[in-house]
Length: 241
Image (cartoon, rainbow, N blue to C red; front, top):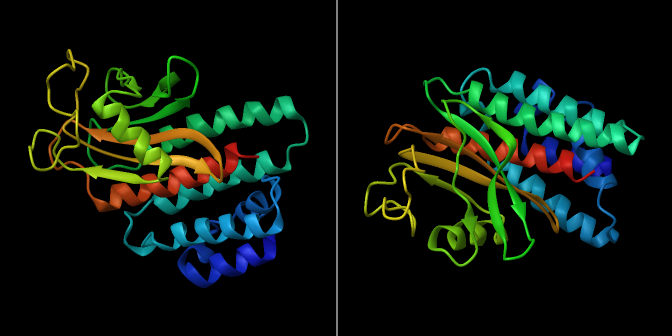
C-alpha cells in the first residue's frame, strides 16, 4: 500500500518528488499504517488524499516553501517511526507547533497570523477554537469560539464536515464575507480583514482547522490558500498515527 501511494503521488506531483516531500516514504507509510480500516477503505482515502495533494500547483508556490514542507514531513516520519506512545504524543504536539510557526514564517508580508483551531465535540455542542497557544504572529491569539448553532460556527463546522477549505479576501465586503462575519457581535474579537483556512482531518478523524489571517484586505491569495491546504494535510497525516 505504501508503494502504491508513492506511485500515485509521484505520478501526480513530479516536482515534489525532487524536493523530498515524501521524506523517504513517510507520508505514504503513514496513510497505509495509521488507519485501522479495510483495504478497500484505505485505498479510497489514499486516492482522496493523493488527489488533494495533486491540486496544489507546487511550482507556483512562493520560494522557501519546499524547505518548510521537508521539515514538516520529516517530523511526520519521526512520528510514524516512534514506537513509544508517550514520546509519539510529544512529537505530535511538536508537529502542531511546527506547522503553525512554519506557516506564519513563510508569508512575505508582516502581521499575518497562523493558528490551529482545535475541534471539540464535548457538550454543549461542537466547537472550534485556538487552544494550547497554538498560534504565531501579531500580538494576540485568535479569541473566537466557533460554536455550533451560531452563523459563523455553523459555517466553519460545515466546512469541516465537507473536509473543505476557504479563502476570504475581505471580510468587510458584503459580497465576499461568509455568514456571521459582519462586525455585529464580535466585541472586538476580530482583528483581521482576510483569512484562509483548511480542515485538518484524515478519514474519519477530525483534528481541527489550520488558519492564516491578515489585517489587510486582500492580504492573502490563492498561493496562501494552497500552502494552508498542504500544511493541513501533512499535519493530519502526522496526528492520525
